[in-house]
Length: 480
Image (tube, rainbow, N blue to C red; front, side):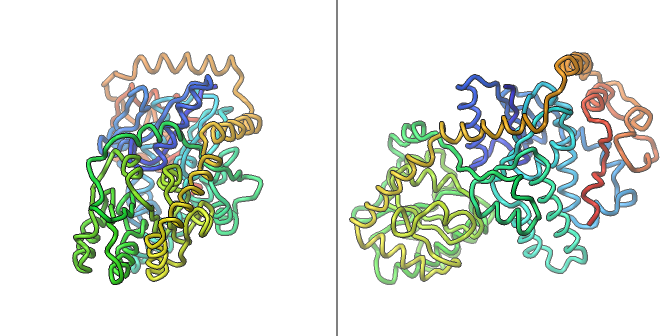
């Protein structure tokens, strides 16, 4: 089977989705499938097939889009800054995927609601489509709107936009996978996704690879007589590290036999360091920055904390369990489905710093209890997280998606790929073509004046690859 794994998030990136894609690719290839990875690279401003290093400039793709889609021709796109931002990102993804080519794939496996919505608009007829959702984009965006745009006159329109995008992205693949019941319940109760659309299954993880990478010295050690509390992840508000720091201030009132390592970077890193300084914790908390050796850090740690305010199924918790660490988690999102309280770890409620400090005290106080929970966590991980098991579950979904979508007639597919080869050979042509005459049907808004000029080779290839009826703007997102 020829498979494409695609994500809307910039790749490669430090985070669970990219690690999941890389590990799934490796396992599927070991089983005899051909697998490509596709996504944007926001820093380089490209869309690309990562393993083939085939790229297209997103700035080049968006140049004519921005001349057609303006505040005058498309007011609903520009009504709110977040809608404008997301729509342009989505169009660059869709046009980039068309340029890079989707015709050769038997199945496309998208990794979020946005790439799922995009691929559903541009994939060839007969190409099967499955989606794994690693969290609720709408939940995160609604919180962002409340935090950053609380008084914007069209923030309610933006909320409606992201709710609609979540519904489309969760509903348009043949099958949608979630890692836990929490996310399934959200999709069903808040966004109206039907039960039959969703399959709940754990991720798989390359346990042997992780244990091999845990060997060696990370170049840091706990001070004598101190136990290591570890957090690893992006330093953003939703990860709840500020809650952990406040709880550590409570712990320090009664004990000092610990040090906390915080591995990662992000937009609130400066705030967190200032918080630690204000609470007198700079000697107790070590900010390690971005690290490529998290497995080695976990091998040196005594316990792990995931204080996230919203979370799906973070691979950092999986890794901590594989490492034999008891994990303390907030009672948020899918986290309680990963930890059994006082068996494999501990759960505290509602970001309560006093409950969290109590959990920390309990595990610091009793070596026997902490080690027992760590042993239980490792045993649970070995049973639930093997990559073989996760990959087989995904493959079953692939065959279900194939049976629902049907397949493109083989002769038709070969013919389409042969025609594509012709357009690919001419894609490097830099001659300019009046856009409206040749490609204006892509847009559902009037041609601007003066007329737009575009690279003939690039846009011939894109137009060939786009399905009939594809238009910009996307009308299904403006019934809000």
